[in-house]
Length: 226
Image (cartoon, rainbow, N blue to C red; front, top):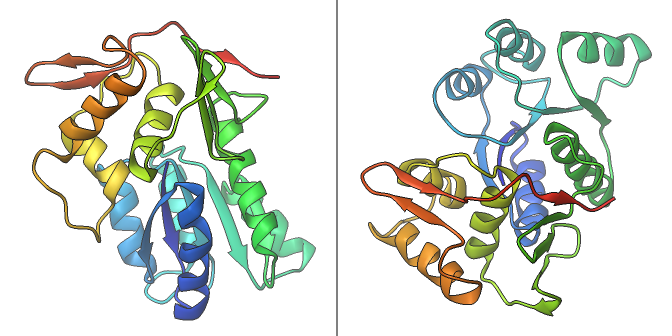
């Protein structure tokens, strides 16, 4: 899952990125409200946004209002030091999906983010199941027909995207941005290699190649663990 973190406090931003890395999230960081708005109004494929309100360039509340006016429904978790009830109501009314007041515990941030992603996908549980595969983001575990399967961090992220969006066609560029984000060097055939490894670890028909277009997980809507 790819997360956009918009936070201008360098130490807090670094701490959040460090905390989310073991959770198999790809985290891209921006510290300016105008840059965040440009990214969210573009074609960047983010699964969720963690948005500070007190930003330079453009206040986070204005960023939130602008993307909602534009029809962008990406889940947004607001981070702020503004803890008054009126501030919380204003943030939720502007289109925030959840609200976390600073200072906060990292465990709560992770739990709220999981819940946000779960709700955005219409799930009662964050666990994804399809065709004998079970992926649990909370425990970072994957199994196939009851047997554990070891995946690299990027293989896990790629499989999670496919399982969360069965039938969706992903271009290679989209998958590259979802798995690697902005800051990492990427080999030209990296996605092909990851897809090959997933097919080998599960079964060859798991992910279908649409030549010249991209990849798709051909599956009925996966069972949701309740």
